[in-house]
Structures are given as structure tokens and as C-alpha cells.
Length: 362
Image 1: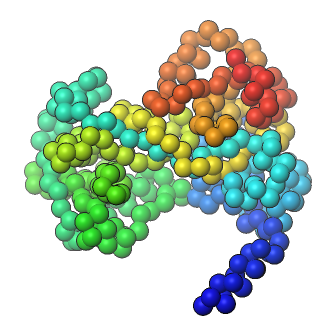
Image 2: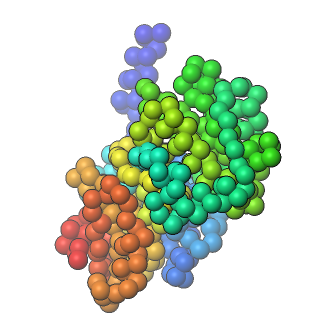
Image 3: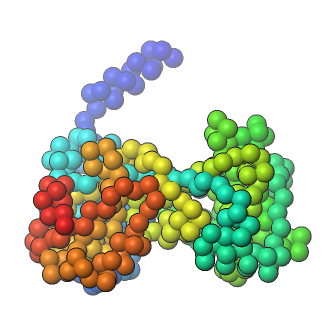
């Protein structure tokens, strides 16, 4: 009722600034540095972040909920090197906001469709994909049949997203998928081999604009992936959309880490950064420890600076700007549509903060 709605608004207005439960992760980075991370209210992203931060992810310690202004104190008591908090809750932590990096929740990108690229290939990777798909004799058809959609969801989509993301997986809602397909807002590209469905992709249409919503491979079978099923999903989706008169397609979202395997798979298929749907998280370096420095060195990322997405590559004070390793890293981290990558040389003991990035950028 209207009265109940008003009461809920008042409760939110006068409610104490309570943060969700905190999780403390501890372990070693890929280079062997000791690292502790306090994750606050970041949902499934904490699982993804932990996989990026640690060589081996151990079960985190669940801490009690607390008022937002006490998060810094808890981080100190627990010896945390980094604090990761949702941007929503960070609004109640002005100190953290001022000294933390704003990370987008996702990077969203699209592909400009080109007939020659999907028939002959514009680069080595595309030509190899086309060859493998042809040698594997893969074919496709398009459907909105609810039985086929359900079969794809259960035997292809769920296994692949769980195999790819584990605890960090955010599964699409099956009923929403079926509803949208029934309403003409989505359709399924089914990939077959010898007339047996082995993969597929759900295409959604948002106000007429196509988007590769989700992908699936039968039982997440790696042999099928090597046989070109993953490549065929994009090639056949692009062919179908070109035939339907579309000039571009949104190929979905990736996390803001520049070594993310999903990002590089999409880059191979023509991913170009379009936008970042706002700040999702704040990442604060609270100690300037060897562990926090190792995290940033091992995980080039995208952060939001003055409203724009910017890449960040952190190097040690001894690394040369002319080194082959740095050149290789920068080439690997390039994303079409990302206008700039900051290379920041951090000295031991210095924190990675917006101010330090501004003064230490090479």
C-alpha cells in the first residue's frame, strides 16, 4: 500500500549505516607475497576477486556485520592489506572513497559485423576458427522452442557457466529466458555436429539491438571446445545477425581485469569497449604492503577516473619503461575503445591510491 511504501522509505532514511557481512581472505599471490583482503558487501564478485588475487583461494573468515564507519577499524584489527567494498556502501565511507580506486562492475562491448571477416577471416585467429569449424562439420539453426531452450539451459548453459566461473557464477533466470523468447525478445542459436546439438548461444534483443546474452557447450566438454564449438557460436551468431540486417552486436560483459580470460576470448572475436555501467566497487590499498603491491602488479585493471574508464598497469620502481616484459603486458592489455592505460611505478611502502597514480604515472 501507499502507507507501507512510505514507512519503508522512512526506515531506509533513518536506518544506521550497516554494512553487510565482511569476509576476510588470506593467502599468497602468484608471486608468493602474503596478502589479506577484507571484502564488504560485494556479493559474488568477491569470489572472482579472490581467484584473481590468490594463487590458491582458501575459505574466507566470515565476520559479523558492522556499521559502515567501522570497516576501516576492522581492516586494521584484521591486518587487511586491501579493502574491497561495494560502491553503494562506500558512499558512507568518505575516507575510503577518497583514497580508493573506483572499479566498474562490468565492461560492456560490441562487435562491428563484417561479412568477409566471418567467411574468410581478417586475422590468424579468425582464419583458424573458420578452418576448425569447417573441419568439424558444425552447423546451426535458430529456434524459440521452449523444449530446445530448456535443454540448452540445463545441459549446456549451466555446465559452462559453472565450469568457467565457479562460485562467482551469476546464472541467468530460466523463466525470464523462456518469457523473453516467447515474447519475441530472444532466440537461440543451436550448434550441431552430425545433427546432435552440442552448443549454442541465446541472443536477446534490447529495443531491437542484438546482444549475445549467454553461451553454452554440452556438458562444458573441453573436446567440443577444441572442436570449434565455442568459435562456431560467435561465427554463426554473427552470420545470422548479418543476414537479418544488423551491423553490430553487443557481445556481453566482462569483469574489469585486463588479464581476464573471458575478455581476451571476446577480444579475439572483435570486442570493442562501449561503456562501463557505473562504479560497482571501491578498492582501497590501506597498507602499501608487499602483498598489495604484488596484487596490483599481477592484476592490471580498469578503474574509473573523472567518469572515464582508464587502464592501470603497476610496475616496480626498478622496472624499465623500455623492458620487453612491460611492452608485452601493455600489448596484451590493450582494448579497442579504452583510450588510455596508466603505467604507474610504485616504490616499496607506497599505497596505490588515486593521488599516487596521478603523481607516479610514467
